[in-house]
Length: 413
Image 1: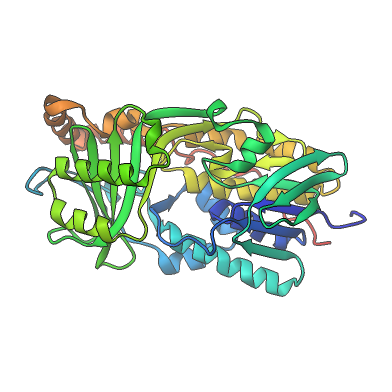
Image 2: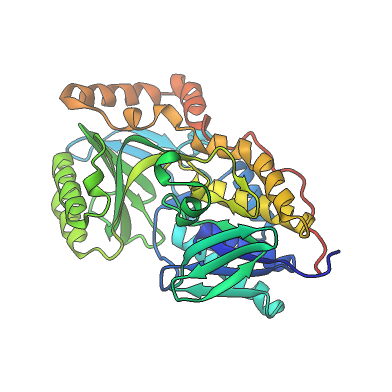
């Protein structure tokens, strides 16, 4: 028992931030979340839950809501220039441990489930939660008594602990431990996605992909069968000018869609109308020490294998579960709590950074010869005889073999 309830500031209202807020509020800990966007971000990629991340979701009480929005993907189908399938990797053949898991849900829907639970938890404990959209941290000053934060709105406040859950390009990480370049490793390409009306000929339930020289273009089904997500993985040298040049990003994506020459007119039309276009470089984020006194980092702000790993959301949920438990266990010594969290999250973060199958070089061929060879290799790898090899390649970066530590909920204050 402590003499007062600590006050935790969370920077970033995505999956990691709201999941952490949920666990803290449920444990009676005062929590403020700031999110620079004006409202929760809709859409986003499909994410999967397996192993420890599924266990974390169950312990958070999220599974009933997840089941309501759960997608039923059948697997990945690889197609040639005419849209003919030349290889399949079904979910059932890989026991839900392949590229497509048994539990799949759109990122926006998972966020909706978490926010609904958070609203219920805060309603049951009035005064514990402050969720501020359209706000962000401008500066942080850590000292023995807490962390002083100033905000873009001009407000200033003292907190007992600050948690950065603000993604790959975390401003909290920059303020706390240094510039992004110190922790970022370029992985050989870029990713982009946007939604579109489901093209004719796409098999219901199958994530359909075409890979040619320099780009892999996928059409992934969403909650509404009439709408799909277009996903591009572009293999190229780093171009720093793309970082903030929206027009250059669009031009590159248009060029790659035309290079794939598969549903290109429909994709280009959808791209021009898109309200959810996303583009970023593929990088690995690795902050060696996740604990920095009264400032902690979770989710992609702390460690990320990029979307290539497929483990960003999984690691975010695991991190939220573990950090909340450590805070609740010693709320009067938050520096010690974050130090224990650093040890607990390390194996999950490492697993989440591993790129299955060799990363972008496996997914996206170089040159015409490479495109032909990649089709032949994929046919061989998805054959029944090679299935055990593919299982090992894909599961290398997953947390299936890791279990959550036994963290019993602390009593409320």
